Length: 359
Image (cartoon, rainbow, N blue to C red; front, side):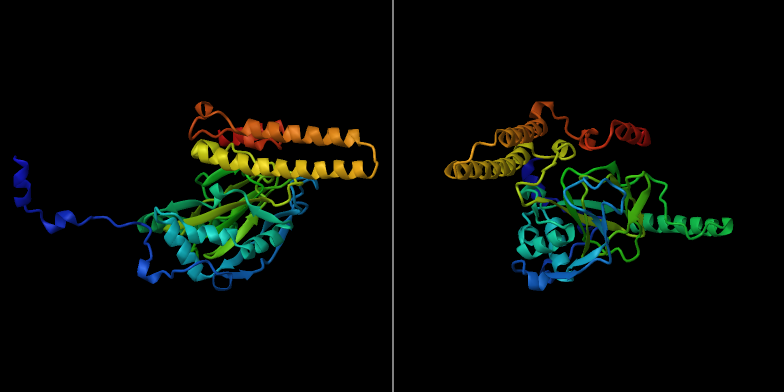
């Protein structure tokens, strides 16, 4: 066929109409508000019913950077704010509203107050990653029917009332996070959701669960230091969560950030650039503080505290060694492969047990 004949070909309209539709329906752009993030308009903070401490989880008092372990769900955003964030995360464009939301001093103040210490976003690279789980309406109905059948069976067996325990593997298996604190925000309507809790492993090996948040609500978790997993949920066709990571603002607090779970799924050039920038800024501030102490002591006629100075040098050497260890050469990174090295603060027995559970 001559290409000039193509214009004469008649294509039925039905053939040009897609026979599918997205599982996630986006809100029409003309129904989504515009404008910059405004704390007075977009924040709707309501304190959580409870904030659990590391002591509550039977973890050693020196574990982590804060006494706070995890919060119960709390209202954080208005419906309008959620719609704005959904519109941005479901598009392929830059998300300025999301970025401004998490950089806002008002938002940071809320998160810091709940965490028990002054926090900042980990780095721009982690504002914010999105988890999306979808299923069709038919799949949802099948799962709900199976759950109802199981409930009826449990009632006959006299074990009704037990928490929902999905037989499938969890969404994310037992792990610790790459960053000190995370805030998990729900962007989906989970009114009819069953399950979906976060399971936490306590210091004595027991499992406790924190219920999942509703739309516009969030939970905070000191996830770098608490082994946890995200349990599966049913009763919904979508579950979209936004995870934003945080670290201490103070350069004098430990930064135990690791890149194990992030490195294999990231643009390494951008990740390493932002990681090294903020780490070197921490080091710069620490050196400036130490230099100021040296100069003040000299002006005051005091002797150099050699022991303290050497301890400072060793600490910064360890800081740089940790940084060098995390920045694996690109050719040595296996994309998509995550090992257990992020569990460094657990004993070897803990790591072996995790591998057995995953087997």
